[in-house]
Length: 322
Image (cartoon, rainbow, N blue to C red):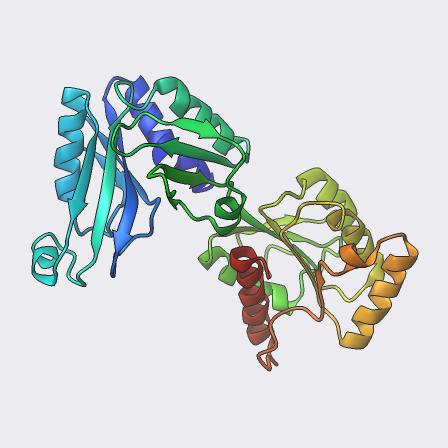
């Protein structure tokens, strides 16, 4: 199961339904050297179990106490920790950061129906925003209207004081071509939070021995992409150098919402690739979506260095839209 499927909302709903009681604690604002980003969540049960983190361990104990009280009283709480270096050290924020944490007991403040819909959207890989007034709590779900926040994975406060918690599907990386670069790229992608999938119909390349524990599909790339589906949270990396494998996959990718499409090859190889795609009916706007030669120009030489340049470019596109 992915992190999305077993996150704080899923646990909160399960604990609430089994009668243990649950409260969701969410970082809604930070200043200075806060250890967790806005939107980080922790779930607390009525009997004191916690999962997740709002501060990397700094103030979890204090949040747990407040959350258990919120479950008992049925009232939300907006907590603030830190302010000065001395005060921050007292609660574990040794770098002097300050955080605000919204605590919402499930059922009494955060409606079970809203949480159920949220969990269902996450399971279905559907991007959704939980929108709430931190002062009153008990928010609603919206599926559009926050395009920049969805793209950047950036929860935060709006100018009107409303807090928007972004729940995006897990990032996914589909690599076509089980070559040496892929062997280096897959573990890097996992560290960066992607769910990687390797596609290669050549069994000698896409083997368990070369990619231990990874999802490997021995289908033709276009068939694999049609089966997997390519959405706005998917990056596609083509590493085969073989037009018979890469081009059919590009035909599907260019008609999809994939946030990143990259193809290995020299400038000359890429120019020929673009000519073939243009002949197939793709216009210049579509062709401009392909990053080729793939990766940021960092002078990479080895497969590992090329993999790093690819991941850097993927993250640049994801976070900035470049």
